[in-house]
Image (cartoon, rainbow, N blue to C red; front, top):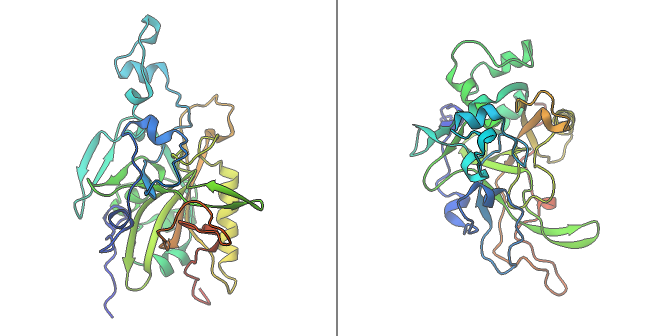
Amino acid sequence: MTSTPKKPLHALPLPSRTLQNSLKALELDTTPVAQRRSTTFNPATRGLWARVYPLWSPWPLRVTKEELLEMGVDVDNGGQVSVDDVRPMGVTEEEEGDGGRWVGSSDIRMKLEPKLLGISSATLKDNLPHLDVGDAEALCAVQPDSTGSGENEARDSLIDIISGRKVVQSKDYGPWSTRYCGHQFGHWAGQLGDGRAISLLETESKEGGRQEIQLKGAGRTPFSRTADGLAVLRSGIREFLGAEGQSHHPFPCRMKLINSGSSPGYPNDPIPSSFDSQQLNISSSRKWARTPLTPSKGRTKFHQNRSFRSFKPRKSGA
């Protein structure tokens, strides 16, 4: 069997059939506010996912006077700016990529200072053997908080995309969050959804099968509640280490490939999320059922039940 050629994150091949071209999208305004505002959709609404973009700052947004002046807004002289003007999506500069996709960024996104903290070599080998991460593994082994030195397209692509510095998308495909429903604490909770998780893409290889690549702690989505959707560093490290240990037991579990952190650049910020952690989760593609979002008599129906989602187990001895 011929192995799948290795490619950097922004150039990974998509499956022939993706979630976005198979299932209906939720209708949202295209403004940044709409994509960050908590929204409870009518259960009869036939949409399962919404296009969103990783957030580069805690929510509500905080912008310095210097950043506003760069935008031509002088608040000291009565200048005003809206969230939509700030564009938290921040994808204003684009460069052509592979497969009709392009890589977008902006000045404000590029101000992020990401640090690659850890990468699971076993998860990379078992689940994404066709992902080229360049010298990222070596950097973590030598200096865990390093961003690397010199040019390395694969490593730079990995760090830029998982940190939110850059966004990979096309006209018909891009980052998304999904809604689902279920029980919490013994009670029917109705709409839940990815409150702080944003999927980047789906990909497939002969050795690793079909996988969904998702960021956890990537900011608010239409399914968020009250928090900013980001994750602090301490919990990110704890979950990363816990997943590594659990993956060596003989039962299926979710894989965590990478743990990274980004500083939004507010040194006097008292909020614990001033240094945020992003986790890159790898899981087998979700199984979807076109059923109502409300429980039926005698049996609960789900669009998606994450509690029982199956994941590809790590090979024994890995």
